[in-house]
Length: 310
Picture (tube, rainbow, N blue to C red):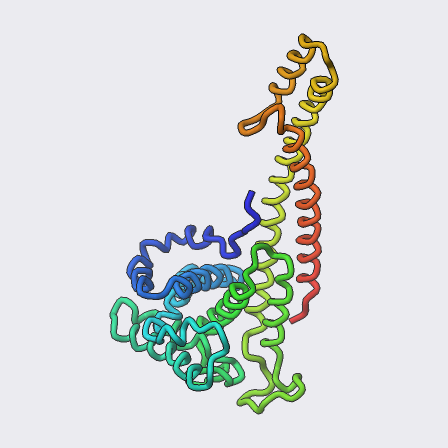
């Protein structure tokens, strides 16, 4: 079993039958580089689930999800030297990068099929306290879809950067989002902002994200526990084979040796043999211990997330 889990489960997306609604919009992502396209798909999936946990209507959820798919469409026209740069952007490069919001908005406004979703590209980098871009809007002027997509965008970007393959240690990412939801007046050395009494992202949306992460972690625990049961069954099976194997290697009587060899083979599966069955058993036992420890860490991670205060 692979130790990689999809943080952005598509079950929610499928339940809304978005394929028929989004075929045209998804085709527009074809010109994006692979990393940006994957990022857009993940942000859309997270956005969809956030809308569910925020108890948004089905219509708004579909609308917001499509906005999220298109939020970075403007990056098609950002030079690769800037878009794909691994080191920190210069001030000039950052200014170029920020234009993807207005470029994406203008692209949507020029296309009748994309126009209804122009809020995704335009508002996903606006901040509640006025420190965002491109317009530096404050909470009262930022559409709710923009607030939701911003949280999904930040979470996905940090997760991708840290290359999580499991939910262990993801709490550090959530703490960054908590920090971003805190009012600037609570932070030492904070710069002047339009509204110092609120943070950059919405607290309630962050709380909904925590619920999404907790449920994903519980899903990972359940999946790993099911596999642990499988490993346990394999160990039990190979222990049965071990009884015959010990007799097989200890006896010198050819008749008994053959009898015990056949006894071992009764418990073997594809890829296993009399010669390697004990090695396979040892590997399963080692795997069982490691995976059980991993599950305990996931349980502890859930406890930590539940204690976080936004």
